[in-house]
Length: 188
Image 1: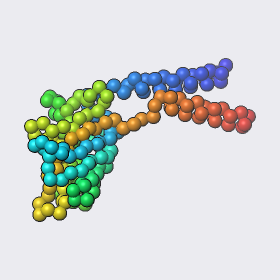
Image 2 (image 1 turned 90 degrees about the horizontal axis):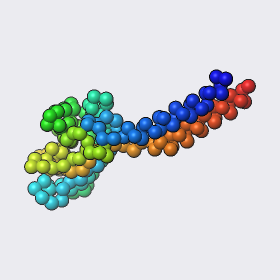
Image 3 (image 1 turned 60 degrees about the vertical axis):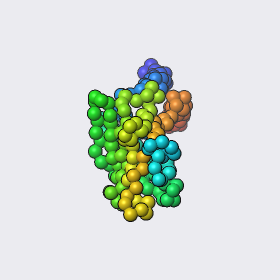
Image 4 (image 1 turned 60 degrees about the horizontal axis):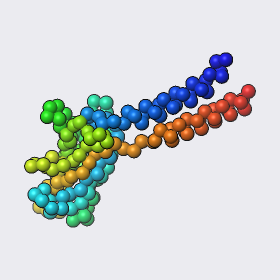
């Protein structure tokens, strides 16, 4: 009797996991998990600068919203150089007024770095906006060949990284159950 209940119980467990994983993806007050950062330099206004380019990469925040991993690159189309930022500085969280900030350094030259701050909580989608207000809080210092390091401001977003949809998880789970079941039948 116990063996007959195993398959329905496992299927129900997989269904519950898939359902609650999809409904739990609501806005969080602070970032936890993997995020994708996409940003670019403003092309007009007071925050536009001499360098033009895009920043992209991955960030990972632990359960206390501390940045634990970063792999970002700035593609500076003005100087035709690519700058990477992977070495983590401290993560600061101010609540109120609701700001989370971090600095990520270039591994080869710690004088070059990317610094950002985001307002918390997140948007309903779970994304955080990188914006410039009266003073831009998302900027970097890079060596583009000028006599001094170049100050570059960016705007963009930090969005939750793509996760497998619940249907994919259910298909994977049922495939694993079928493989397990056929293996057990073959060994009996």
